[in-house]
Image 1 (spheres, rainbow, N blue to C red):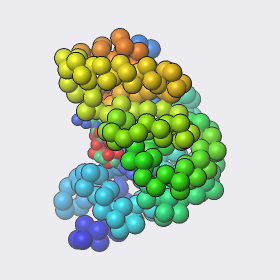
Image 2: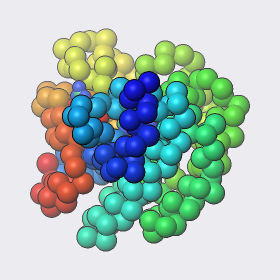
Image 3: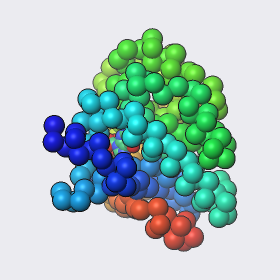
Length: 254
Ligand code: G
Ligand code: G
Ligand code: NA
Ligand code: MN
């Protein structure tokens, strides 16, 4: 409740900051994209985790305003990097299902993309599996209208929803992000190894791109690359970093 009040001032006081975490293709020595991850630099509490304040922002409805702020700032930042010579760099932004009810419409997203001057296909919206499983009809209409702008849709934390995979048929999804819980015990855990191989085969058959998140060791990275999961994200390569550090990162890839 207190945090909710303080969060109200966070945007206009400039306490919110977007960090970016690279997704790399180690075989090509290339950074494919960066994921925008919000940080709250609280004047008294220090850095507050989004795991704490995003749920508060969702419950209070503040995620509407915060979500728009993240989208427009991250898209403009992407344009800066693209203009600096990294013209193929892409951006992923996490989307909350509450943003639909809070009125984020395709026209708003179009405006964000136009004002940033980026190509819509360089923006990926990361949505959680639970969004695709719950309130499917409204979610389908909403996501289809966003997707029609030319942006990409990615299923975040893929595999944790343990539900029917039929939503992959109904929703216009472009990519899957293998949840880090399937990565953390690779390559020793044979169940996880089998799951990852199965997800890779499914993604190939459904023509979906694939990112593995939470890669923390060279052994995990090798297992994933050897099993045709080529786009990797995790502390082994890079932690989420302030925008100012991304330029340096891009000039000397992994
Ligand atoms: O960066 P970190 O691992 O601390 O993020 C914790 C959680 O907060 C993750 O689930 C992440 O997806 C979520 N998160 C971070 N930034 C944003 C954002 O801008 N919007 C939404 N909806 N969630 C975010
Ligand atoms: O839910 P989502 O996948 O968006 O969560 C992203 C969060 O995961 C970020 O806040 C980031 O700090 C965290 N993260 C990114 N890479 C790693 C990693 O290699 N290991 C762990 N444990 N967390 C990670
Ligand atoms: Na994410
Ligand atoms: Mn995730």
